[in-house]
Length: 163
Image 1 (cartoon, rainbow, N blue to C red):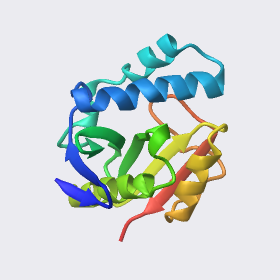
Image 2 (image 1 turned 180 degrees about the horizontal axis):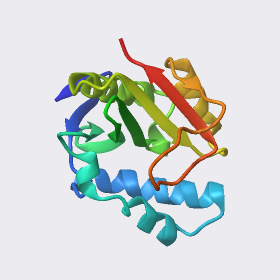
Image 3 (image 1 turned 60 degrees about the vertical axis):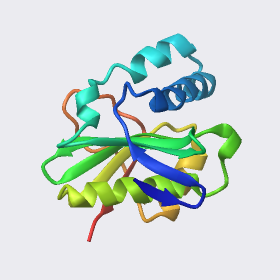
Image 4 (image 1 turned 120 degrees about the vertical axis):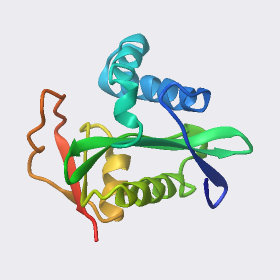
């Protein structure tokens, strides 16, 4: 368990009740931004096998304040050297308080502890707040996404080399 500012971070599984608000609000936000339905996006968010976001190759954390989830994110193995960030989220009522940065810091520490040497992520082109966060925290934008095995490809990709 790690605390940062107001949030206390705990490791969870994708089906943990603390993760439910993350997935629910992401579904609403993505559906709104990208012109889909909440149900369709919700199914897509849960389409990844839960074990991809579990040790030994992945992880998921939720940051809560007084037991209320306010931020979170996950990672999974991309390749032997690289972890891929997914599901980075801060509740809309708790944004602009440093929770996104804190979530990235907690996830990055876990990723380093597992021996990964870099972090990769992709995001959609209608999430300028996410792009700004990643650039401000040391990620570099790639000209195009890395080649992935059978997964989705999003237009905005970032990479961060770890020390």
